[in-house]
Image (tube, rainbow, N blue to C red; front, side, top):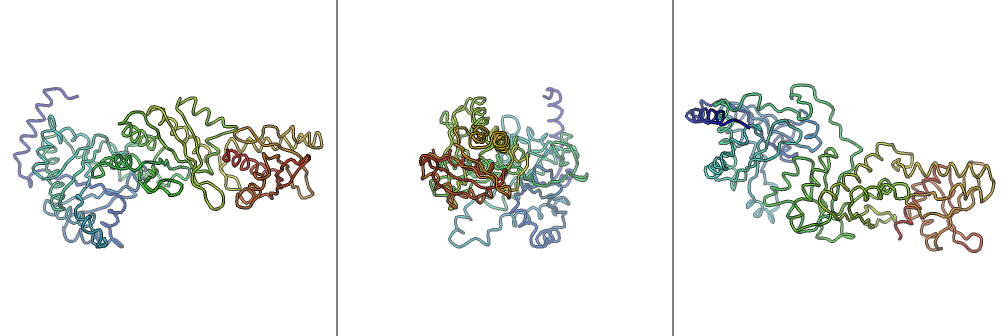
Amino acid sequence: MAEPEEEAEEEAEEEKAVERTPEELPRVPCHIFLPVVPAARVIGKQGANIKAIREQSGASVRVLQKELPHEMQRREDRVAVITGDTAAVQEAISGVLERVFDRSGLPDTVEGAARDRDYIVEVLVPEKSGSHLIGQKGDRVKALCQETRCDIRVGQDPVCGLAEQKKVRISATTMPDAAAAIWRLLEVLGELMAGGVLKTEHFELREASQGMLFNAPMRSATRDQKEVPVRLLIAKEDAAWIVGKRGNKIARLRDWAKVNMVDADAPPFDPSERVLEISAASLESRVKVVQMVAEDLARDGPGKLRLLVPTELFGSVMGHRGETLRSIIQSSKAQVQQHKAEHLEDGDYRFRLMDIKGSVSQRVDVVRQVHSALEQRGREGRDATGLTGGSALMDLGVGLAGALSSARASPGPSGLASGLAGLGPGGGGLGLGLGVSSDLGTLTLQLAMPNEEVARLLANDSSGIARRAGVKLSSTRGAGGLPVLKVAGTAVANSVACYLIQDRIFMMH
């Protein structure tokens, strides 16, 4: 915190700077933050739009993409950089905003509503300028709002991925007002630079994690293929609350990750429900967004989060005999229930729905641990069936190998049954009978089923188990009329089938 004497010196310098005309103020670069779609409009087809802006204004105009830090590239963020003489920069700002807010392609039915929307633009400013822009008790930013006839908000948090930069959000009723507000903001930054509060290096866009300048080599920005987007099922009224007035709230979330609100599939969900997708960021950043959402929704007291997990990855959340999920519940002290979700034509479910109840920290901890398990499983590799390798599946493979050893040591049903005791994820499991190796190395397992209907459902092609595991399935009756599901395939394929069968039976209960 600055000493009173230092603050007095800064204020004196600022007062001297204000006496200068805009032409006498130091030139500062204009950094306009752009999402990917508006940025594409600014660039235009084969760069036609940005070339026109440069020619008409005489300013230097660039749109940073690959030069940006890895975190910003993953969110598909862009930054327009404008430099040049006073008149050139002013005209270039107007030219950029004309492309950003181009609504010429909208249908006539929505054109009227679109014209009534505010013109919202975000500008990057040095973090050091934040308190000076706000002023004592907010006096300066209030004066700027009155002067420009715009709503100006200085962000509280630094921009994720950038060192020592903040966003200033400008909401205007007309595009000229928005352009004028940006220019007035640049004038204030020029005043701060003239007063010695800001220096040239404060405007350099540097990567937060490594502090690398944009003219230095950047590391590869290849998208992390192991990432599993966080998906929260949101009620309609909560969705509006998360977006916020004029999109202010969701814009803050997008500082940390790529955040989209999309319609939930109906059925199985209610048509009014929404899915909040959080992606293209580190797990830490995605969990930060979840925490911000949970804190915001906690306005009415303790609540719950509804987390959607892809069905094909849910085994890594359950773990061997449900050990992983039990560990998550015990360590977080949250209440967790999982339900069936969307039913597809092939009999699979697209998502599992997890209801998470508890305090904000407990709910966020569950989301963190669930996605850590999902992405840890992805790092353990994938087998030829397309299923992600994980502890549950490896346990099945080990168990099946042990069963074969038992069968060889003690030929017959008893040897195989003892070797396969307790095999399968989630416990409770499968009754296993006779195993026979053919000349082609095919092993046939006979699995005791709860009833004949379950055996037929699992053996049917619509279950997708035979196709996914690479085995042949058939339902029959064993000794004493016991319903049996026969599984015929290689040792590895049968272990995968056992996993899928156990998982499907678990879903039926």
